[in-house]
Image (cartoon, rainbow, N blue to C red):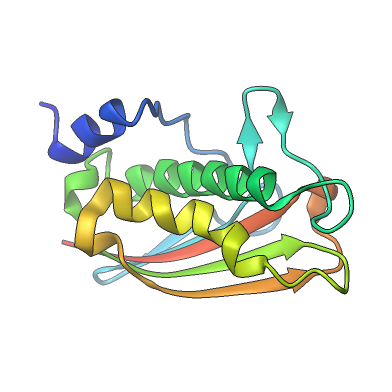
Amino acid sequence: MTSAIDTKLEELGITLPEAAAAAGNYVPYVVVGDMVYISGQLPTGPDGLIKGKLGDDTDVDAGAEAAKYCAIALLSQLKAACDGDLSRVARVVKLGGFVNSTPDFGDQPKVINGASDLMVAVFGDAGRHARAAVSAASLPFGVAVEIEGTFQIK
């Protein structure tokens, strides 16, 4: 049976990849009661990891696209946490965005909007969330963005 969320993802042209396994001594997500805490997700596009440093070799639009791919990875983990049923999502609570950027780059919020916009497009008002968008001197594998998330489920 297809949920409204699955239909929305299809309308947006998004096919969720399989949720990635942890790459270290941690788990991809933890469910505590009605909350799901998802570890930081890296941006993997059609050509692999999306690398770059904002303010140097990557512009805001490319960074926002990388953030969108992080959000897609978050949704994959969330789907796994919900036993394949994204209609269980009650609320996107908070996103924490880390932007690989130069010291003088100040548009981290515009970059993380790529993820925030997707959450609202998928979940409507339930996708509106609290957020942090901060600079990082570097990120794993040289990726442009990493995003973690907290979600409420039913």
